[in-house]
Length: 462
Ligand code: 9WN
Image 1 (cartoon, rainbow, N blue to C red):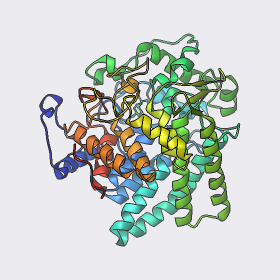
Image 2 (cartoon, protein in one colour):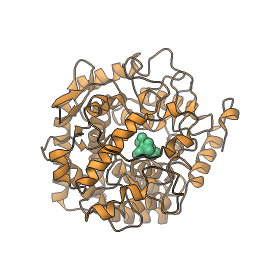
Image 3 (cartoon, rainbow, N blue to C red):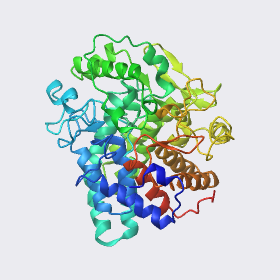
């Protein structure tokens, strides 16, 4: 693919950009699932696969459906969809912690049979949103594709329902409507300042030395989490494994237990999608009532987490019994969940446009950094502590459209596509220079580009 040195000056027509995005997905295609990235992430990641399916739908709806079904075939007995399904063919030194480190199948009888091994964590549930999108594209294409997509939804529905039920029972024994995460990796926004306070309270015990294979695949270690972050990540994995991945024991003893507002908001939007899927799949009325109740519970839960000081939503540390109030894109949770209070939506849009996010005058493009430049933990080159993530922009764009904010959505799409004209399909971008960071040829970046390019609404021209 495009190298970074030669890419800076690149420009491309929408057709050329779509062709390049398609090449990235083919490069990472493993048959019925897709690597998150060629070198840094040679396995199947849960929420990556959902975004990838959304992009693949524009190339081949059947292949997109397979992406999700392949993931669902590794669902745990509890209903959990694991955050990683390990590729048995990936070189052992490509990713750490790999399959042997997790070895979940030998730790928990709830894990699916191995190989392939899975991790014992999960990630935000974008899957129902993706499944519905695949179906919609297939309906538009019509004919055999539409029939196949109907069968796909019928097949996917029970897995999706079990997955959401898992999140609203095991991960919400309080009935708050909000999901508890056990590890920053579950949030998908790993080293975000959101987790700094809760992680600082975790006392790391004895850890065997471990390799940082991830650092081989980025230009500079400053783009990845620090060794201190990794010590905490691995310590939390060790504790979860020591608990036999048993949800009740984790809830009782685990030192990192946080209500994640972004994860919960995605679940609410996904529940809306699940409700539509239930109609299409002609599911029992009883299921639909359950899902409606989940949505209502979620909305109430998110309202409780509204932080009037930031005009954003805040996560909540269950162990310390206090909110975690960092100013990050996760705070836009009510916009993503949809259907919240209109005064909160107005506040969110004001913050979105302000210098705290997309309105910062120093930005290369008016695209929201993952962490607000005004936040003390902000670092423009470090992973979730500042860079702009195209996949997050897709989520915000989709949410703005759902909320009827067409103009803002068109602007976000236009500038996001302009950012991707470098042809790198970077994992994330430095907000002030627009430099691609992390992995190149990141599958979900290519996938969201394809969905933007297929969208009929006119993008605002930068
Ligand atoms: C740990 C694959 C994944 C994304 C996450 C992102 C990063 C992994 C890592 O890459 O996490 O799960 O090794 O850093 O934070 O959101 O799913 O693209």
